[in-house]
Amino acid sequence: MAEIVSCHSTATHHSFSSFLLDAFGRAGRLCPRCCAWCWLMGTLEVWCRLWAPWWGWWHLGGGRRTWGAGRSGEGKAVPARMGATWILQGLKYPGLKSFAPDKPGEIFLMDLNEEKPRAVELRISRGFDLASFNPHGISTYIDKDDTVYLFVVNHPHQKSTVEVFKFVEDDNSLVHLKTIRHDLLTSVNDIVAMGPDSFYATNDHYFSDFILMFLEMFLGLTWSNVVYYSPKEVKEVAAGFYSANGINISPDEKYIYVADILDHKVHVMEKHANWNLTHVKTLQLDTLIDNLFVDPDTGDIWTGCHPNGMKLFYSDPENLPASEVLRIQNILSEEPAVTRVYADDGSVLQGSSVASVHGGKLLIGTVFHRALYCEL
Image 1 (cartoon, rainbow, N blue to C red):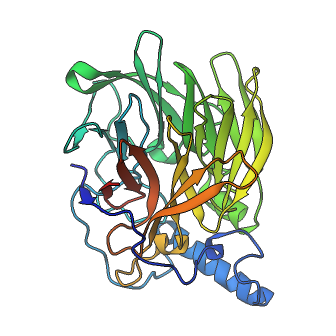
Image 2 (image 1 turned 90 degrees about the horizontal axis):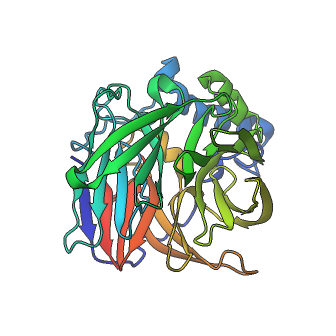
């Protein structure tokens, strides 16, 4: 069962005197006052911590965390109908703690229109390989006949696929329709549906092999990209990212937003009739931007962020990863307004990755911790 706790305040809980951002960033930004040797050793430490579970030679230190049941997986909130929020649980990712490593992924639905919203697990149809279900990104598309299609990024056996489901509202179930694989979908992070069988997807790495991914990030290569997929064509439509992460679309469907988590930027791109994307502008922030939620009423972008992302890979209960939620208003203007809506040092919520809002209610999801429900 997904664990969701409640709060009733939007005030910033803690101010951050420093952001340990660049320790998770690209080459040359780890410590600008340090010599090359310090940079090299610091970067090696970050990435050895990331790959320790796979290489087995780096001691993380600190006590082993004890987690409550049902708190694993990256929460990703996407509205299919107004107020309906989908929650993924069960992501297993290299370097991140999983307190239920043998439990397959799950999908929950939470209706924020309810007076006391609760997460309801959705039953997945037979024939789908639940044992290897490792969900990451998610998006929905509602057809003209009101059919709700659910697109889920899946990493079975550390590969990348996109699973397409049909939502059956009468019995809160999902019927698996097909699995999409393609050579251009190498390391898919997030997805935004464009039709019942088409979407944009971000590849957060160029390589899918873990060692090559490490080298890619260590060298600061900008080989991450955005891919457009349809049954008729599959093509790269944007490139040059350090690590393209969250992706979403403006309410008028004219613009695509892409979060580059390692570069601390939100990219705005214009969508064309041939599905190509052209760069419009970039918004620089001072935090690691994960997933993007777009308010369908206002067009505001809500994002879950990591003010000290390196701590996500620590296993130290005294040094918890913090959480932060930002609201970006009027991103197309010359001076977008950026507001910190929620901040926490990790004592309440660890590793915020997404924020969804509807009707004065805010739901914050995390990479591996619980979700937090707030009344604004």
